[in-house]
Length: 158
Image (cartoon, rainbow, N blue to C red; front, side, top):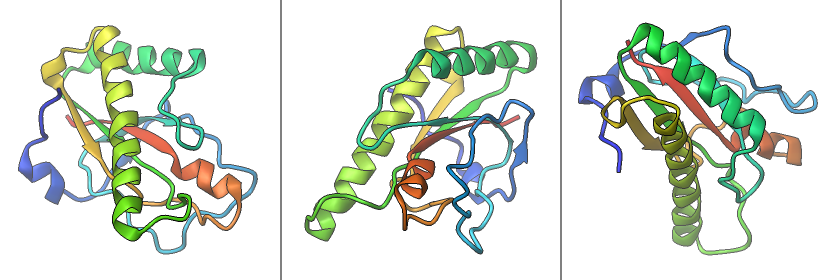
């Protein structure tokens, strides 16, 4: 439903951070060592966390998304919504594992994108990406690490 980002965005380096970033690091779990910075040009506006296997938003998530929409109205441009998944799935073959994680990351990104549109961001300004489990930010040796990787990141692109 949502457009694809311009190709030069994928090759761009670095990502900023905004005061709106609101995601607590799970229970002292360390970020993955040597994790490269996201390859997205722009300022991170928010991170929305999800429960395992879920693409549901709660009231607090909707409030953060409304804040992002409010900031969008002030600055304009475009918004990239990146869905992510943890690498854990039930015992299944590797292809099924990849598809399950891709699907949940896409579902999460689309849910957030639809909420941004409901909050007043033009659909033409929202770009969705499904990252599956390719960009973990936490080790997944404990459930808290899984939780940190089950997320959507929202970026202002300009």
